[in-house]
Length: 207
Image 1: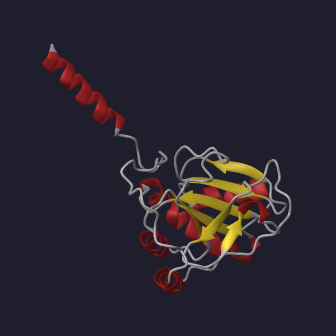
Image 2: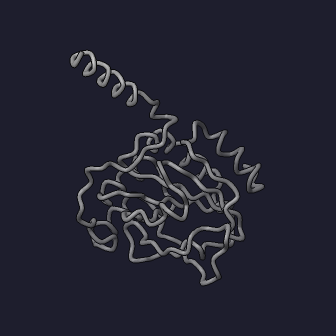
Image 3: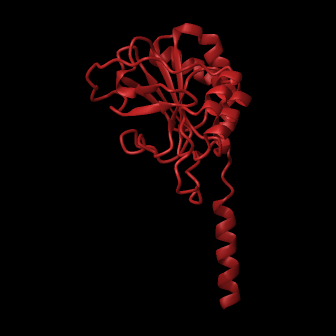
């Protein structure tokens, strides 16, 4: 009987690991180092960001936070001295993507974000948030390989988890020019067309 139970437990465990990485959000690894990552303003990270062609982070305003907007949290810019107050990002439609370099589904959707961000140009502000990630250097390498040239923020301490109800990643938020969250995508994008359709339907941006 004991042998039968062991076999059943093994089968259930394997079944739980069989989700498709292209459709199942990832959760932070439980074996991450407890120590904080190197400061995002270090010379090495700044140099790596510039060499990767990743833009520096935009300025944010002091406008009051909105009930249906991004949380009033200030995050460091990945590979930069700047900080960004999320609630103060206003002025143009935004795509805010939560990701990490250890996340398999994030890797799957990365080319779609890169392609649509390039096509959108200045009409839409794309911003990434590197989430629960202990290795900012690896994160910059990931963004470089993905072809992301838009700004990236750093949330090693998972500060957006509670206010944005983050359970797994990737997740993407569409934010209108007034700073209001109008749509949440809780799965990785499967195509450029899917993301362009959401920009059209939710933000009125036709590409």
